[in-house]
Length: 109
Image (cartoon, rainbow, N blue to C red; front, top):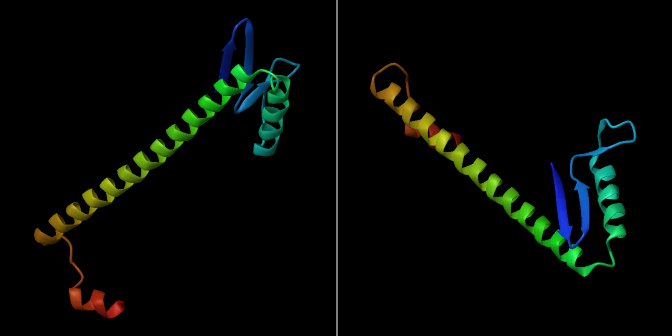
């Protein structure tokens, strides 16, 4: 995934996960290398406020999307746990599984 920023006739790429090296192959970068590459490329456009504003807006959107994905993951995990609980309860009601008495659960606490 990469970020393309348009500002007039300028067209800049900021590679997020990989960058195109001289042999035209993709090289996997560590987080520190990515951070250094991002700041190096941003240094090239540091004098253009329009491009910097676009970069900031895009990064904010990325952060918001990341938060939303994390919330959706957590919600999905919770729903799966609820489904598993109801399935287990159904098995207990049908006599195919045995539940733990409430007294035993409270004594463990």
